[in-house]
Image (cartoon, rainbow, N blue to C red; front, top):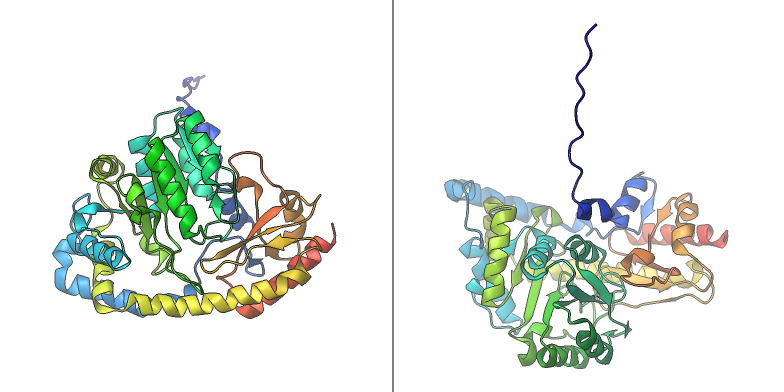
Length: 400
């Protein structure tokens, strides 16, 4: 009789991989993938608004005229044509920028990962908004950072509380989405941005300013980037992305950073993926040269504004009495808080049975969560679907 050999177990994954959970948003999307579900949970742009023809023509033009370059390896920093176009767009919006200031990344999510690799040692403190973009919390936790929430209000982080935490925690960086924040939709006003920049200057702090939604403004005046304030000029990393204004499937983002930190991120990117796909970069550069991206974004923002207004008009009837919510001037999300003792995590399975979904607010908190909160994305569905989704949401919550 032959005895099967005994095999020793293989080593387990690293502790950080075992201790960090997956994205609750991704988990919800998997559960609610049924076509009959009206899904307010995702952060997905409206696919019917993609300029598919323009993007296809850009790819076709690049492959017809520069296929050898497009299908070859590229430099880690990014294709010069795209870096130059990004620098020009940034400078036109009030922040002087050269192509050499830009590192092209595989989505702005990679930019966050590169910064964590370049800046953070295990145990370092990172300051974040409360609530905060969920995937940023994942990145910092995966790096072994101590993530500390800064108290704030409807205008964003409180500068006084920020300075107190900088003195006490000695953090490496503050991460913020100051314009149409994910998840709340709020925008930090100019005077608050100036105060945050001043704290960073006085106390020695990196600011990571993530701006994936800033071009999707429906109303009000544009607010300058924190990076444009003199006090923050040498200590702010500005992140950008084509995901919300062109197409997320291109996986094109970028970071603008001071020289030494940018070079450290280049080394981290070399270790991660060598470079962002050449073909996608050249196609994006061709699109920017041949098409009017600003006009396209304006059309998209007009549709999103209508959808926001439809959702705002229906919330009072859908949500329980005593609920409050934000009124974003742009972006993709609004944030609601139900009265006590509602727990949006516990209620979600009941609501999903009515073929509608949201994201509970609890996962967006680095500290003690507010379990009565939830995030709604208003851009993916048509106005008719939004109305129906809110009707279903009201039915599901009414059973509490």
